[in-house]
Image (cartoon, rainbow, N blue to C red):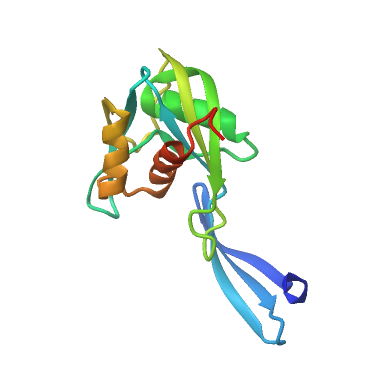
Length: 180
């Protein structure tokens, strides 16, 4: 099925910060030509930071699209060419104020593969020690340490709605590192 799809062109129309809006033209299997809009985001990371064996760190930040504070796991976009694990450590330091001694890979996924090129990498982080980096200029963060069970329940109940945070928490619940 994929062999009959032919990419004809790709052109960027708008770039701001890490985001680019582009249009990709394709010839479909039946011969028609279609232009798809794509928001180019790149690599994103989410980190489930264990403060101790049963408690995790959440960050709250105001999200202008929601018009409210969103409770999330530390995370964000990788810099161009940055390894996802390096980005996870950096984001944990910027948003959470901690450095992790050890990370466990949980999963990777595409948050919306119809119109975003984003690939999200999800990790659990252990052995935290304080080692903050300055937050991004537009981040005003509140930190909260909660039992893992409460964070998972927040994801299930819709109190945590951000996709990378929700997937990271639910992936950990479904298959914690070390358990196949």
